[in-house]
Image 1: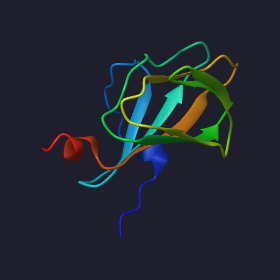
Image 2: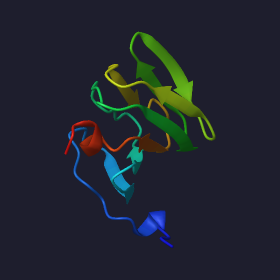
Image 3: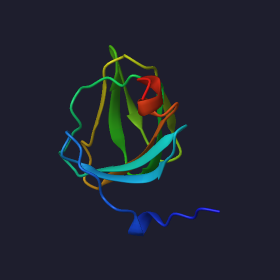
Length: 111
């Protein structure tokens, strides 16, 4: 059994400049917890696999393709592969959410 305490999960570097903690990283799935501080944003990007976001704390905005919406606690947002997407925080408290990629991006690229 693997138990991960999110408050002890190591941080990982990312091109977005936001706090990123890998909680699970297997051949099949990758689960990352992202924290975006007020006024900060992820860059518009695509992923080679389907992704979903699940809100844990705070409120943020999400853009997928030409659609935008608000994401709150206990909200799940699906983001299909190869569609540009980004998330940002217009609020006054940190916006924290899970990113789940399946299959793992390495697997989708044949590695």
